[in-house]
Image (cartoon, rainbow, N blue to C red; front, side, top):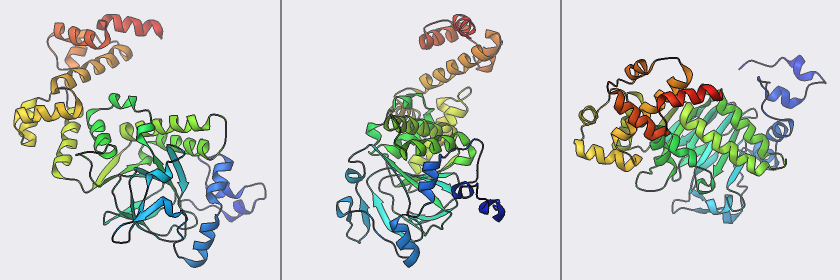
Length: 354
């Protein structure tokens, strides 16, 4: 990180928060939010003096396990709102704990060292840690220039209609991380926000709306959270970690292969690659996606075709070559089923509207 010259800090026309959060292009955090995040609160003052953890939550916010571990409760933190955002208090270690909700931890500035399910995790600036319910984690003391944001939310109250638009591998990741049931395990994901600066922009905008009392800020927070989840799952590099089992790992790789190689993939190839019986694999894909492999492949083909029709001057024959299709009649059939118009009609309509 580039050091800020002392002359810049001492300039009377410069706010301290401008030094603490070096300006980016464009500037994301507003003054209210940045001032709030850098200012020491009561707990931080105590922890800075003593170095000891201070539990700031009332007794109804948590229980303790038989081992004495803190277990934080969704019913308390999400009682009044479906989204709860807070700054992690600095200067003292946060002890081992778990909770019954999904948590996003955003490393806004600096670094954070955590232990998640007995594994050491180092978050760098821009990283976002998604912790599933049931994960056990502790957090090493943050320094004065380390700003970690905790965001928890009730998925049942968030618009997830966009979920159906995700690629199969992204949809699978979303399902086994955020939905309770047989596929959920104590897993966590590190998203590398620097790989997608739109994520950082959205998260900063989300913080601005949450920590100010603007009109409609509650509604805007929900919209920004939806956009944030879409950006994380569709456009951001990530690393799945934790108590994964072989089945989950293979399934994720399976859907990734389908997304990446839909033009040339077949059920036989996938079955051989992942050592499954054809019928079993076909049923498993249907169970997780609600579609057969053929339906998934055809859907991806027409989506690719629509993109090429709208953004290039390629002939239909060239588009068929790109899709590895030889049967023009079949292509027209599946395209019309998906878009209720022929490829030529689709192109003309898009050209007219633009």
